[in-house]
Length: 315
Image (cartoon, rainbow, N blue to C red; front, side, top):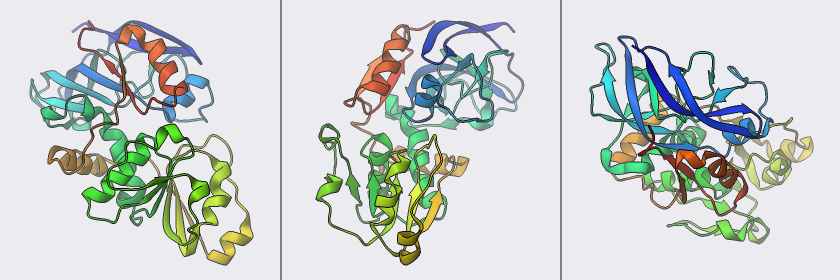
């Protein structure tokens, strides 16, 4: 079977093209998915775009980015566990021959193991692209054995999902820090404040979504004795902190790793049941033909909380 797809390709840092690629032939355990929407990550994909991504398994150019894809199953192998017509979430794919897939979701057609896909409620529409980010938020606290956050640092998409997950799981609403006034809107049932206006210094659970390692001393200083700071962003350089304040508070530091399949299944269930609202987080949309502009906007416009590519008219 000879399959081709239109795909976003990062040829090198800040050099993006949209071109046709040959797809690997699907096996009995694979599905062929026609993409409806794919998201652009302002964490890992920003680092790939800028060339600042630390050494990472599978790293190298040219590559197809993306791991937030929602599409419809067109073909399903007999051992795939899926059926044609299902709407599924695909957390990336490695199906582009010599072109690397890191993470391989920004393409009109994907070939992926059926076991890696997750059925989603069709009514979620484009909002289902947020499931990987929601799984990241879930894993940063509840999924990796942490406590429900009392302070979330950053009111981007990840911070908003953390706050919404707290409500969905019946935990008290966290305080959310946001230094940029333009990003303080969009809260529902929780407070978003300027860090300079928050006098509290007894948080027991802090989750940092900023990716800014220079904030660590400030965050340690805001914890109660025995409190925890979880690092949920992606940090490009060494992470360091002053020892004495952490020693006096006996602060715990935890690195939240990549989400697991159970995390993705948990948030897909919460979203499908209507307990985890995903409205209002996708703020910008572009067609694949405007992918270069979409990536620049996603990474450079503070008003852009989440950018998606709409593949509905791509071939």
